Length: 437
Ligand code: SF4
Image (cartoon, helix red, strand yellow):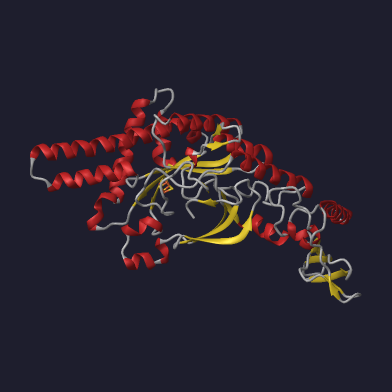
């Protein structure tokens, strides 16, 4: 039962006593909560009250006032529901969010999923849900990777706002952020103003140190020769073993859709069509080379993340396409066979003490999940029209993301439309477009 206990028209806070009674009328759960109203009306002077343009000091005074009232009742405000958003105007002063209305900021806090650090991807997976375009470095007038100072400024701003509010507006420990959308976050190389590059582990570490919130990493892997990424991955393992909560998990995608595998499949198909033995052998050899390249690459990725598997901080997403006679190269059996080859290679490259029998069992029983791809983006080629329209086959999404240039965008799937929200953070690249939107 809800009782309005006190209404003060000159202060838009409404103190609500929310009682739960048992059958005899005894109060079981007594809660006081300040509720905010968006219709702030000063009845005495018959006009609406605006706090727009209010300074930070006023917002802090208001936070203190609400805290005092809560404390008197033995509670602590811990979300924007406990405040009048209008009276918090000024809270974002001096931060990367300065200039955004408190209503927009509050809705951003509750709906954001991605803090995008990099746009574009070189993995060229033919099933890519986000239809990722190739990564390009340094396109004039456009942004492909976040500037390191912008990332730090965003992180520091979240930290500063947490301090001002004395709670985390994004929900402490309840959230994970994805640092990517149409990219592989492991390949992040974010340059600072002095020209020094920073990798994904530095980003994870900096973000967690300041906000106590984790990133979730998904990767399609890298070639062992890519020293920058290999080092970043080793550092990620080391950091996660020290600070387990700094990431929620690393999910490794394994599938025959990666560009190496799709090339291998193309050569294999071509070899079946030619009569000339020499040419046939050559095409088969090329097919095998690409397949082996993928197997070696993924075995090294699994070996690198082995310590995280053992801590249940890593898993494998083994993907396949639905059964179709004309695309049988991507059926579940094909993916399972591919994983077996990677697993055999992993056993060969690991010392017995690194990879115990128990680990092998865990891989097969717990660490690999096998899933059908969703009918989004480029993956639609693996589905017929009725399957595409079947809701079970596509993954509906309404992600709110902060793009690499500070623009807040809503990504709607399965169409994968990028809708501008009109909100833009004060990144140094504010005047530039992200080159892939
Ligand atoms: S599926 Fe992921 S790794 Fe593959 S191209 Fe798309 S973004 Fe890149």
